[in-house]
Structures are given as structure tokens and as C-alpha cells.
Image (cartoon, rainbow, N blue to C red; front, side, top):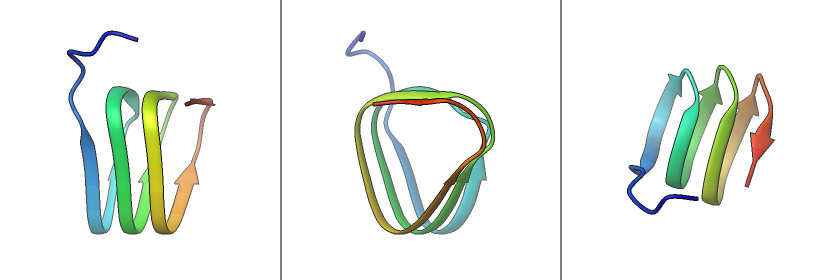
Length: 55
């Protein structure tokens, strides 16, 4: 995966439409609405994925 992708951080509650990311961190409750691809995924709390996930 290209290393120029941005990081995604969700603290508290939040959602996003998915996409390609370098690092994804969810601390709290996060929802991804669509397909997501990332190099690293860390979840401290709840994560909901409504699509395909490639880590």
C-alpha cells in the first residue's frame, strides 16, 4: 500500500465513509460506512464496519 495515505483517528464517537488509510485508530465508538483498506488498525472500544475491510 502507498505510504502517502493519511491516518484516520476517531476519538469519542464518529463515522466516516471508508477509503484507504495508513493507520486507523478508534478510541470510543467508530463506524466505517463503506469499504476500508489500511496498513494498521487499532480499536479501543467499539468499531462497526459496514463494508469490506482489508488490513
